[in-house]
Image (cartoon, rainbow, N blue to C red; front, side, top):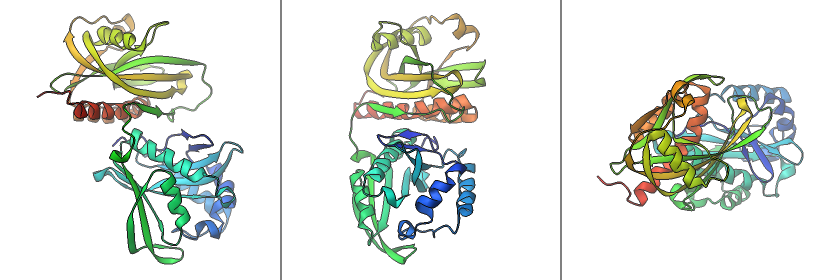
Length: 362
């Protein structure tokens, strides 16, 4: 599981982001004070906006916890907070989450909640790496069940007298989606934001070619970098790769980078997908194109002066589990967290592909 925390997600009509204390008025007036919204929920209406402010203060304080997932739904058209969607129960041992949500009554019936639920579900699968996402509703509130259906969940069954809400003990109707239910498209498409440094502006995009490299014995290859620059002092693990030169094809770029950084001749198996992320500190948007590559042979590396003198690049040969642990260890720094959030989902997908295609012998 990748403890990526609550990151910004953008849909066609919504921005799902972290709550701020300034959202208290929208939350209180929009849904927290409305008994129709809370009818089937487990918490009562807020007596005043100060209660909402106090609750938001508690939520905001938890955002440094990578296992805390709680989004406010901001409607793009108005910029107002219109609802809330969150993980109400996380079971790390089976990589599963239960989702809860609510929304201002003024926005019911517009398809906004299925839009949010579908986006959060995709994030929990593709970025966090969960295997199951579920939600339930009071049997007397079928409207909520239709939200789950529209977001791609399947009804599992009814647990009689299993829950309690503002109306009392109730039967719960459970819906879920598991990883194997989802589209088996070979390519990931991940959108990430920089939550470590404040966003000011973006003044350039960088097209990057990267690779998850493996050998026939099941080992994966990475580079270790020792950095002490504007991002701070850090020891990092990262996939091999770099910027695509003008007019260069992506596969040619990734093979060149692997030759330079690892000294490896490689075979490109497939494209894993694209991870879009940001480095707010240097005002950059990255488009990381990831490929799965098999190591054919090793030779001499051809590192740049900066890679030798500033980053001290070295090669890491690791099992999948060792690599995941190393990424988690390197979360101690801001840059390490940004890299782990981007690369762990890609590494997980690469492992799935190697297993499904039987690419590893031994």
